Length: 516
Image (cartoon, rainbow, N blue to C red; front, side, top):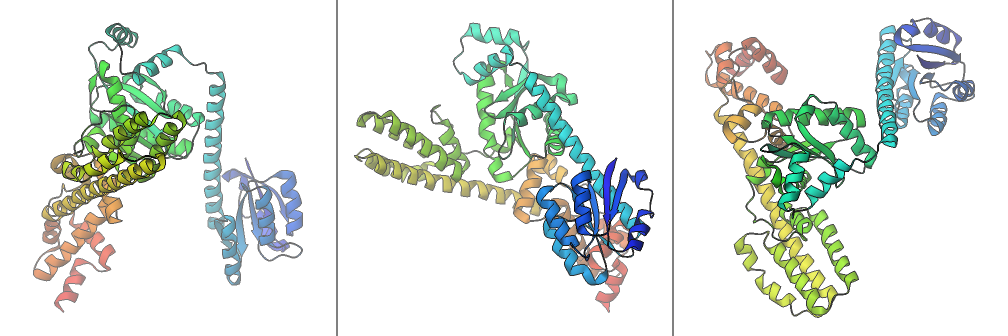
């Protein structure tokens, strides 16, 4: 039962609201009715209510003063405002303190009940989240690292296993002659191991569980090795995990999965999955990145140097911020090593060459002379600055190329919509699976990012615009004929409703206005 406190300087108001509803029926206990802010504050210190319904204008301490004082000490306590018509500006001022609810005097029973239900819903959700975090922390304190997890980490991070080691791991995980995929899940923003542990627990609760050969944490991410399922099944599973993680941990999640492969390819697949995560930079929060989304559009050669992999990946993906961070770390490491000049230049030329390989051949040729000049530099800072400058130029070119490819995809989607506007099956899923052969979630986020409007809104708007043209060009057209010409022939009545929602008129009214 949640606690509620009523505050108003008028006795009749306090009594009428106190008896207005059955508080317990809505999950609340009315713990008191104070006549001014100071009395209310004393009760709050003693009882710590979950919700306070307060008047604004009161003697001794006003409602706004009470809210400010309570929020400093107990920011979690929620408030609802009691006010008259003339006090709206005062009520608006309370919004900066997070007050969401406003009750107009005399108080309406339905409005009061709605506020109680809203507040109770938030309190229940808050308790679920707190209970979820508490239980995860309790489990975390008891867990003991398993040897099996360390084995798989060693296996994935190493690219040089001999046949005996490979056979050992294949038998250990019972994956002989089985095809696998690698999945990586990475929370957005700042997080710690508790967050990853919570994510692992969410994964364990999914129906997908029997298809997972192995799961663990690697490089601040959750790694899954799964059987070779249909991509639709994998994306449904990842969508469910992202939704549950958002609900329970209140965090966004980026996920990626690879092509199928044999178990002896797991290190390569793991590295590719890590590379894919960089492309969340373009797609924003909570996205699924498939190997098709990345590899089908890639025109940049593969990287040869394992040691430079992180830097090369940032150049390839056009991520300027991460590139400057990683290359600065690289040069800081070289500086600490204090190599002789020849060894230092060898590492710098290797780095510059790896960066140049991430642009097109005609672009790289323009930098060859720069590469020769770098070998003649005689100090650390000059060499470092020139390589970072070249790197940033190539990062910018790759970023522009990726954005251009994104623009081309959206332009294709707009063209497809106009060409197939009469088809009832026209939808985002239809375009993704039947025309572009790409992931629908990826297309949805890309379309919204480029158009500042989601796909379904745009499609409906285009259909209404097309319908207006049909009406203007054919005065004798019936409603069902118009609906058919814009892909809504299966439900002319629904078409008429949407037409009126968008234009403010029915098709017939619009026809009369146009013809008149």
